Length: 221
Image 1 (tube, rainbow, N blue to C red):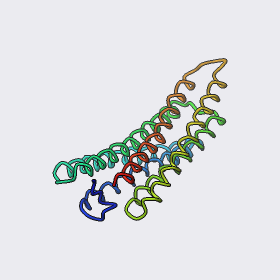
Image 2: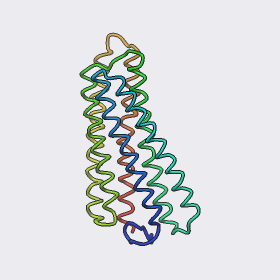
Image 3: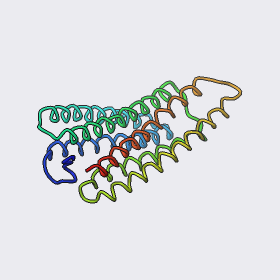
């Protein structure tokens, strides 16, 4: 049986501390993405550029920290189940930052070349990102609750799953709106928004995937 440190209160304190820091940095990118969209919608390109740079920097920091954690895992004697749990958790959380950065880059590409996202579509995108931010915050809370209250941690993963389902429904609404706007004329913005929406939904997908790993930890420890 795993000696998962957040539940057992022993071992791996340094690695767990790094892991929690990694998760905080990753979810910060999602908050910055929400700020980025607000600035773009208000046509504040300088602020948007600065926020995009913050996302890139956070993603880089998270990647550096991930490598440090992986090195620590290689150099430490750790129960195989603990190692597997941490690897799954870190790698899946890291994907959240990767998809957030990709989404932010797609937004910037659209607005840097002078295009804009129609208001009806942008409003739904904002709703998607707002729910994604909430899912990210719940994910952090769920992970930090593992050692204190595993039942709460499990319950929070159910909330994350519910949010992902709502985001998936919104994704279909956005795509329907895109098709409606592009039915008479298919231009570049139609293609760019479709790809953007796929990346945005991938962020919440990875939040849910991480929640599934947390569930596994709570039931096998």
